[in-house]
Image (tube, rainbow, N blue to C red):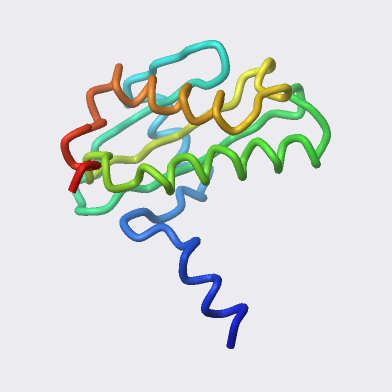
Length: 128
């Protein structure tokens, strides 16, 4: 029972995954993009009550271990601040080449910075 109980704390409540290539392409073509040193974010309204998050890390960033680590860091930083994001968005996050040397704090601040630029971060929601 313990592993199942522990798993409950790591599930994103308000977010589904963006998995299909066609969904990514729609977000890339029709969405707004914002970039900083480590990440690029595309956002598009999806007319639902949930967000859909997709993370893409190219082979140019590093080997599979490095790419998976960056995906985990992005996903965890999103999960920790999930309640602060506006709902009804498709979000595609792309890791840039320099992100392989980043720690959690750098990825987290880069993600929050881009969401503030985008206008999808509501800092008042996080204080509740």
